[in-house]
Image 1 (cartoon, helix red, strand yellow):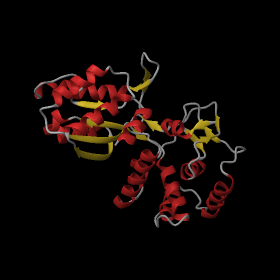
Image 2: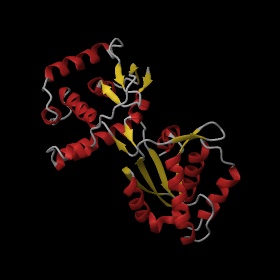
Image 3: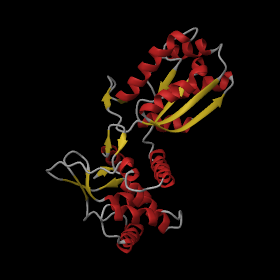
Image 4: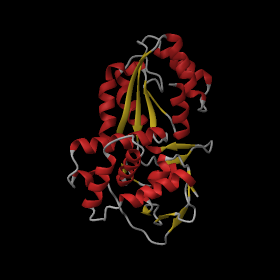
Length: 284
């Protein structure tokens, strides 16, 4: 058995999700339950472009089976040795729809790359509107499963919010952006709560707040999809994304000379891992 979050992460090529065919199947399931009017036609179009037979009734029987009995463990997902999906995209879509968190996996002794990037759909006659719907559904899955990172831009770089966001967006998919105006006590509460899950000393948090005191209390929150996060273990054995570390280092080095009263960490904060994402999301 494998956690479906871990399975989804294995379907990444650096920053790109490799299996948007799963998203098409998820949209099909949603139309089956009356939640959209586009899933059937997208699925039919995809199968035609892949030169596969269109068998909606077989898919609907599978959906009914999941709805009634959940995942049948006699039919595990088949995965190549490198972690990429060989067979089972319909069952993965059903697992996502019915919130089944643990799925049975069988690993094969061979490696193969089977990818359906957004590029494939763009090159196979899917319209701009259809691509946008697929992207939106994908983003909803990432948000629902907390498979993203939350970046906080602090008040001292208020004048550079747009510039920083634009630079991040060149490398990674920004799913959502929030601007939040706070008073002094609200900012203090937010900062303390954000760092509560981290192993940072209180005096350092107090120093951050002191150095931010003279700035207008407005922050920008970015919900960012890093793709495969490239985790490493810290000294405390907890995970931290190398991509998050790299972004923080680059932005701090670029902007620390541009603001007055610079103190370490008053420019940007990024959660280390998905546990941090869940924590900060609850605070927001």
